[in-house]
Length: 457
Ligand code: UDX
Image 1 (cartoon, rainbow, N blue to C red):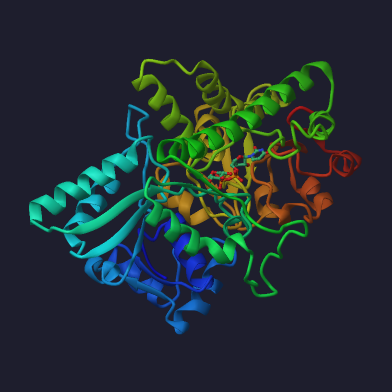
Image 2 (cartoon, rainbow, N blue to C red):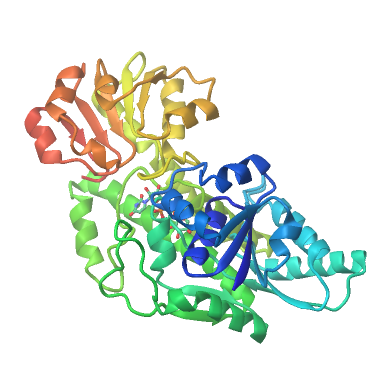
């Protein structure tokens, strides 16, 4: 099947590469010409395990093409995915639909008569976007006087985690589609057929198929419910994390260990063990944006979603608990050297969007601490984002530890587990560590002599 993907950001590129791997002919479009030129050479501008390898494997097979011409992208394509950015609008918390609107209008100007097209919203978009896109395309068709174009608009949200996109896209829990048009639904089913049936094999160096996996549920809804499923899922996951963080804070007060509490809770199949890791709160490009998006959807219709509002507020408060814990040990942080182990919002990504580290650094600087930072992937990104911050950028965890009065583990990078912690201990001025992800071996650190403080343990 011939497929176009509009937007080669994170979602677009993963979507395009996966459909190409499954045997379709995919052409990815972006207005950023430099990005397209880089992609044609197999270079991607962000870090995602296995993705560059996948793109480089598909390029010579001519199954994955890149273009900055929308005409070229749509020339043969029956199915057109819209995967452009939908950031949060400044001040209002609503979703900024500028790019989706632009793309919908341009698609409308490019569609050809006597053909059928299915346009699919892959970006996370407000409820009702399928109607908006349909209306804008229709408007462009009228403006250009193009007649006899047969098209439908569907919703097909993605559920990819950064750092795990390949597992999530090839071994999904479900494929959600919302489409009123039976011809469109049939196209989507054909497109996803190899994935539904799991009829493909990734290279042996890639993540293996989960052992219990067989067919993937392909679930059809009306487009509005499909659009809401994405928001509701992310808001639920974010709230689940905030819930366990709340329990962690209570654990701190009563002397329980939140890891054990989460283990005991998660064994109840109604609760499940996923997303019960307490810490300094969630970050990243999705949870905050989607929670705000859902809240805004409700408020625009006169409903106050108090649970979601509390969930959002509590998450941002949670970030500062790592600092309160340092203050408990050090009294004042003025003039103290504090090191941040890791900066990204989670491991296996170089993404700093809405990363707790940014709030932590800002607060530490306000408290007049000297802030040292180290992250395996995100140092340049931090310098780019906050060039004005007077930070000490270190090349490794040992240089970071040297002379510090306290360390905060911000990101659960695997490599931090195998550090020579005895050496870290000797390098520090005061051996205080706040484990913001409950990630390190507490017993071992305490045996060395560290003052260890976890989140809820
Ligand atoms: C999320 C959703 O999981 C994904 O389905 C959606 O499409 C996009 O948003 P992502 O933001 O990439 O994906 O990362 P995820 O792995 O979900 O983690 C989000 C944040 O929650 C991270 O900061 C992570 O550290 C934190 N987290 C996650 C916890 O604090 N505890 C947990 O138990 C799980």
